[in-house]
Length: 290
Length: 234
Image (tube, each protein chain N blue to C red):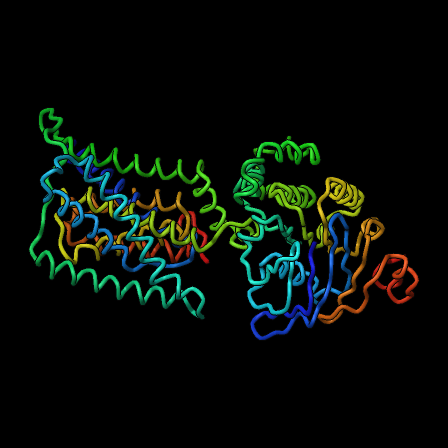
């Protein structure tokens, strides 16, 4: 019993850490540019597929190389998508809705492209660490520990970037006061595209990390989009700290509900919690809507 | 330094500025007066690339700058200091100032400018790690001016520095504006609640209903009873 509960807590922590990495990316785009990216889940799958392709190359033999190569690919991809699809809409009326529609279209396009290129069957990635810590009934794989620390490391790296680099400061400036950012000469359009690109890297990396445990499928991103959305709304749209708390709460909730009631109940409970939170506190945990 | 001819500006379909012409020579302090909501801020913002729909001629050092975005203009040395300050609330005083030096031309001299600004506003030095949102109105105003100075500007457009300021700080603002000008920065100031600033002016403009209704020296303005009574409060 004790070990079972420990297992559940650990699995909640690990999933929570990856969710945190991904939800921070989604909340970041919203906080900075007020755009909502419906293709976010498909970018998650993209991370997995890029890793799958990279592992197919003969000279790629470690996850280190995969991360090293996947990050710039995802960064460029995100930057290009923002410039080509999102930025042109920003000048129009009701652009927020139009951005939702176009990213939704992109998601469908990408998911079907995955299906055509890779087929409908699941793809898997090799675990990046073998072995486990074992003590009696207690079992904790090195892979899970690795995933946890890489996610947390990613979030810390992102925090460092926001606080200590010129580009990071300009991202915060645009999020806090777009008019002020324009006055000091920050190129807003570049910041929007950079933010979008960074969030693409975050969710794509999450895709690579989780693909080792849950496989890659063409439609696998939707589940992630829904969860990232729930976490973002739950934590408060645009609040990074709220997103972090919410991600771990959702991770824990999921693993406890899955363990106690069965996996089919997790989404139902998740939405019940979301609806209750929003009924009591429409702005989310740490929220700032609008 | 700045030369505007037949400037028109719109917010969506609302025609705010109608054929405004104005010049600011290097080293001058030019003050613009006029009732609220008649377009004074829009003139400043148009120069600084913050109004989307403009037409006419705006020249800086005899080169056309109309239509350039604020990121290019700040880099050229043209900076706007907003009436409502537009600070970054969740950042410290120091971070706000550092962002003031965001443009490429200001980066190299960031350290020197920081010292200069702290000398000009000693209180900001004490409060450098305080969040901008926790500052009083007067301190926030000083921070907004200081952030503008960090950009290495050669031309500053200062919009109503007295807004939200307690009356006893007005002398202080006038002193600072004089000091900034003494450092060789050319100024276009919208301000009518601080007579000391009007006294500093090399030239005065009055903007009414989007048009320039008066242009001249302060002596001319003082000779004009209408102006004297309404705008100068003397």
